[in-house]
Length: 296
Figure 1: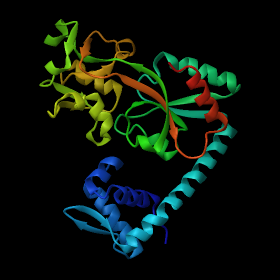
Figure 2: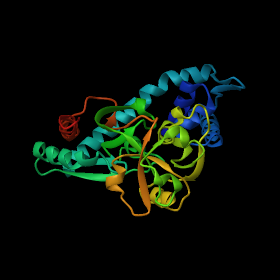
Figure 3: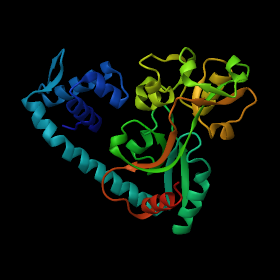
Figure 4: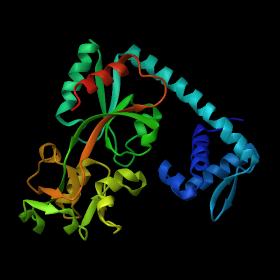
């Protein structure tokens, strides 16, 4: 019997969380889809793995036995996958790096140049990630590392090296009444609709709607987007305003969008991110060294 590793990862997450809703949020799947995966695994194993109640998901005896064995199985597979990926990377002399929006801002090209000094003949292939699943390439092994903004989904599964921190601002349609002001207070924006990332990305979306600065008030979502072009279009169309790093005014300057200072929210931090596990070696270690040498 062959078991889909995806089912084992889903099982492990439910076992860790003891709650279907939290596990589904962590995995970026719907609760019904996660329930279906658990039932599929139980059918394949011929055993009931959880006792379901209004209090959560408690492991049965067979569930506890599987929970004890699964981490070693997944760790072994992840180690094998990393070994294959490292061998492929070395053979191709290409390091694949994911990124969101403006990557590491003006540090991106100097980091790439410093990496090439350490690895002559090598190149970095940048692959843009979606705000809807910014760690997808890291989880699947499609990229070796990524430039991401903190916080991001499943952050505890990855190592991070902070590269820079910058203030956040407010982006809005150029003809929005608030654009008449040079600076704004976030507390005065609580009734405004916001252009947001998909809800499944949890803390990432919360950060970009400043959930921690809303005093418990729920954000009014005017549009949901996953890519910079869609985000910019939604803002320009007046679907909502949005928090953005101040660098967005440089990288995404448009005549139909205004960027204004905002008080009452914390800054945004960019980090180089890579999977936890064995100590980085080879080209990945050189990228980490190059990036940390140029960090603020």
